[in-house]
Length: 319
Image (cartoon, rainbow, N blue to C red; front, top):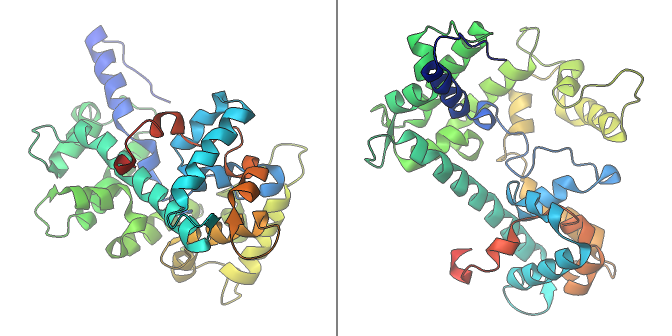
C-alpha cells in the first residue's frame, strides 16, 4: 500500500486526501456493462441478479431488511415496472427497468465525482483539474511517496489517454457527456478502442498481445489452496473454448476480447431480463405476475437489493 513519509501532520492529511481521490472503480473497464461486478452463478447466490435488477450501489442496503420488508418493497417496485398496468411484467418492461437502473447508476456515479473535480465550478472538468485533484501531491513528489511508483505512473498515463479520447473536440476540457465517457467508456462507441486496449493491458499478464485461458480465468477467479473450482469456473472455461475463442487458436486477440467485453456486442440487460423471466415464469406464458415474482423474491432482492426505503419516499418523477 502507501508508504508515507512522516514529515508533518499536514503532509499526512494531504496524502490521505489524495489517496481517496483516486476512484479505483474507474481504473478498470467493467466486463458486465455495469450490471454487476459479480459472477452470474445462481447456484451459489443471486448477487448478480440483485445488482442487475436494482442497481449495484443500491443493492447493498437490503442487508438490514427482514424478508417481510424486502417483499413489501419488491411489491411496490413491481407496480412501478408494470407501466401498462395490465398485471403482468413483460420482457420489454423488465428490460426497460434494468436499463433504467443502469443509466441511473451511471448518472449518480458521474454526479458523485463531478463536484470533486470541477474545482472552478465552471460546469466543465479540464484534464489539469482531474490530474491535479487525483494525483497532485504525488506529482509534486514525483510519486516517491508511493510503494509502487511504476504503477501510479502507469495509472496517470492511462488516465490521460482515456481522458483525451473522451474529449472529442480536443480542447482539454470535458463536458458532462465527455466526462461520463471518461468514467464509463464501455457505454460509448467512440471509446471502443480504449475499452479493448485497457482490458488487454489488465488481463494479458505476460504481455504477448493475446489472452490465454489461464489469464482469462485468472482475471475472474483465484483458487485457494485445496479448494476445488466452482461450477461457474468450469462454465467459463467452456465459454472460452467454444465461444470466446472464435478462431480456435487457444487465445483471445483484440477482436475477440472486444466481442466479449463490449456491451454493444452483448446486451447484458436483455439477457438478464430473459433470465429473470425464464426463472420465475411458472406457467410459461413468457411474462410474469407480481405473484410469480414475489414467490421468487430472493432472486430479485433477497437480502441485497436497493435503497428503496429511500427511493419509495421520493416523488415518482424523480426515479
